[in-house]
Image (tube, rainbow, N blue to C red; front, top):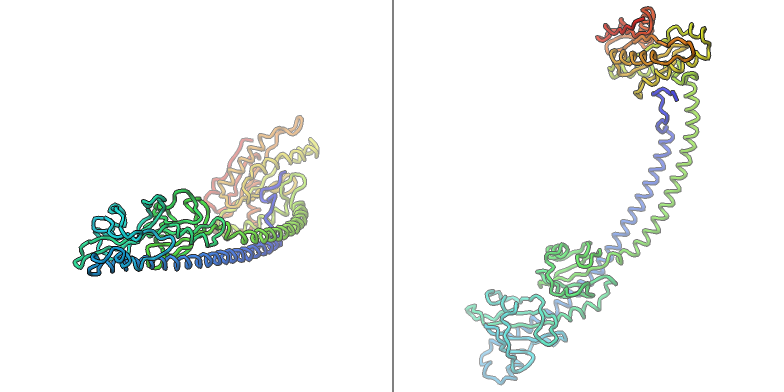
Length: 513
């Protein structure tokens, strides 16, 4: 197709199309925003409900654990106070045993309560009137008190007992000091970690949830249900989730477990003033299971609604496109020369007026080429109108092929005369393009047997900022230059000598006759 470059094959959407697309798009966006907002709000509500439920579990555990630890502390305090009684060593062993362990708790998961001297040897044992012969100087709960005068109760890391069961335990211990602060020994009470497992099993945290108890230095004391083998007593203080828990002490957040790599909702709290933290880890798959089902149904319904709306919009837009295409084709037919496929005189006049106004606003140059086929009347008389039409189409092909910029326009001005509008082009640039077109036409093969080669004469006119000429004057100047080219022997490019731009004075390219 020889359509001139200023006529795009696919014009941008019309105002009616823009309004249709904008209306449909805004409607779809509004629907999606509303549905997304509602789903996000429901997601937040589901999370809030889960956090509240987990918080209730945490508070229940806090209360139970704090109460039982307090009982152990009472037992230790009672043991320490009894050791300070006068004449304790002189009373019978069974009476002394009752006095020492009068406040000892009787919990089912309680381990032994021991009184150790400053060397770690057992002085008194809650399990028997005659204390066992054993030394616990190597235990953490003894060593931590040797050089630490702090009278507060200490909670040890998990350890295996020396009993036949070798079960996991933790110790609660207090230092025995003289009035001068001298280290006299340690009062220690052990708790079997089965207590926490028994407590945690009574709580409902879902199929994939877990309840955990860690010490403030990051050691796992209990976990129910177990998420892995041999996790009790392991140090988790360097794991990202536990580092955050240890840092914050209380709160809730969602993350991926470093143990089983599943997404969980962690809710945690410190047990009173004790160095213990309870963690309830709920599976996010279970927390948001109902929300996901709702979101799936709502998303499908919303998607179908939006797709239906967009489909209707597409149908309407297609109808508009078909109507606009028909109108464009009629406009193009009205603006296209039927023989050459270039723009016709009417389209050329409209484009020249438009580009002239634009050049005046921007101050850029505007050039115009007027092209005339040399001796075409004689060619037509000699070879006939059919070959004449072929010759004009060949000339139009070269002219149209030389015009490559979108804003340029090649047109048939009338008969054997053509015009090229070149926005933002100086006189020198216009002359160069004109010479290219002239040379291209000169190199055309003869259109028929014994036909003379085709040549053209080209006149160049240029408007530049500061010139007070109209589009008609520009056309007249280019036409005047064309006739100068013809009068000087044809087959040449001549620029308008009357133009005031600096490039116009020498803008004449002469070719031999």
